[in-house]
Image (cartoon, rainbow, N blue to C red):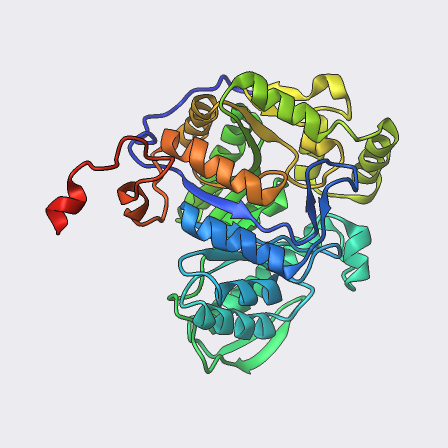
Length: 394
């Protein structure tokens, strides 16, 4: 791998865009344990969404899969009880038809008043995909997704679409109710394979990677950027990672150790075997290779910890440390092209507050709050009693 170098950037002038995560497969304080576990229930999703809506997060990712509540239905419910929050919802080529997905997209974009984003998920576990009726091998799934997105984009752009390809055939398709966003809600996508990077370069607006060491992220960003440039396109880049932010470094690493303290060696072996034998995702392989299933190999970069990936598929790393340490690491990712971070933490409600209250000030991100709290005299504003402001206002 080439030596890491940071290009000229305005990263410090522009705060990174921060998203959070709705744990539609459940939540808890300990990985690999039912102790202090929170079930996947809408009232809890609502608590998280309303909190992050006020804390200053731009949006939330809703995951997809057999173990998750449906992201479209959940996002629809959450859109009605939030004000600013954007919803990154899974678009599944091969699971639904492009015309049906286009109608869903337009409807949810209108209901949310233009707060919909789409996360294109081609899939990484053939066993789970078979349960959804998808049996195509890896690269053919990306060919199918390419056809799907060409039809989907045409319909949402107001075109009458006639298309005949290897995977789809449509005649005089149209969309009578347009989306709020023009020409369509932005497309996000993560795929580390050559086929995935080609699809990103051709079709999407923002390319996502999981939280690898900075050099690995830079390598992928530059590869996808070159592919997009060869097609006359420019992409944005984002990263999906967990957070464990505390006031001291000792507290942060203690919290990381606590999170995996109830995982057994047997659970790790079962999870790692599943990653190896069931999944054909290049990104998942890269995540697993960071630590190899070993507890003594979990620190994979400055403040970058791979403990979550011992048992969790997908995003398996966390940024661990003080607000200043984690902010410095984020700026390093910004310097290689990342402008959006999709974060999470266990449990997600409490960790959203920790990230917003500890990390956001270090990143220059302001919360969505009124100025009322600063004007009220209470135990958090010692010394404000009788400061003359009330008298001046009377």
